Length: 431
Image 1 (tube, rainbow, N blue to C red):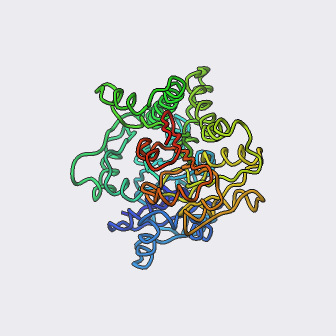
Image 2 (tube, one colour; image 1 turned 120 degrees about the horizontal axis):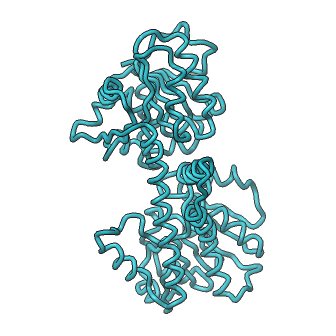
């Protein structure tokens, strides 16, 4: 098939690379606000496993061509699929792109809306098409940063919003190479699929925030929240997924989807007190490690030095969009705390966001170098390189031997037995 991809999101890059890798002829038009030259230099794309390499391979083979936005599509061969993977605030761009193609396309066409737009937008895109054999469907973006290639090429499911049997068959054929093990399509009406995508992220965020509230209560009662988590997860009605307390979630997509769901509810006149509480809880939890540090030193923080391991909003990505570390840094600096920070991938993004700050030093190579001269260590992002540290070295390096574990990846009893003070999320232990 001939496929046109439009957008500069990770979902656009992954779709272009994956579809070209299985024999489709793909033309990719990044959004003008983020051209291919900018994407090629972006750390978040070059750091995404497999995607950048597959883009290079497909371009060299000729299966993938990357273009600037054309003034018109008259000279282009007609497409079978138009794949839209744009940011939520780029609805106008999606409509202009579809309208331009519809003006010259005479043959059957399926527009695949892979963007997170308001409920009903896929129908609005179809209204721009000119012929009865041209259909718009919704295929919500379910990618995870750091695992985008695996999720696209070995999907657990595709959520397909489509009322037209022929269009559904075209989508299945487009993705047939990634759908050989079992039928992974769950088909439903378009509006239902659009709302389902938002509702899924709303539920996941609610579970995270609820578990963080339970962890706070456990702290107050002197209860180890790990016992509570295991007891809750063992209940088959609940399960263990997204039941890990921490210092809040971030990322460009998760946070945007929650705001989009809130907007959808607001537009229908249904205000969601639950969702507002979830968002408020998440923001407050980003300062949890700061509050633990404050309590430990009885509010006397000025002039102290803290090491931080991890800045990315999750392991496996270079992004810091809405990351807890940003809120944490601002709180620490407001009290005159010096920060020595290590992250294996996200430091360029942090430099770009924060610039030079007199209370911040960044360490690219050795995480232990960030701990030199520090009173305490804060674990913010659970990169694998942090899971089994040299506890003896940390005990010798950290002035106050204080470990603040924002992701509960360490065993409190084990850490305390090494002579360190452990404070996690709903967990604690003393030497």
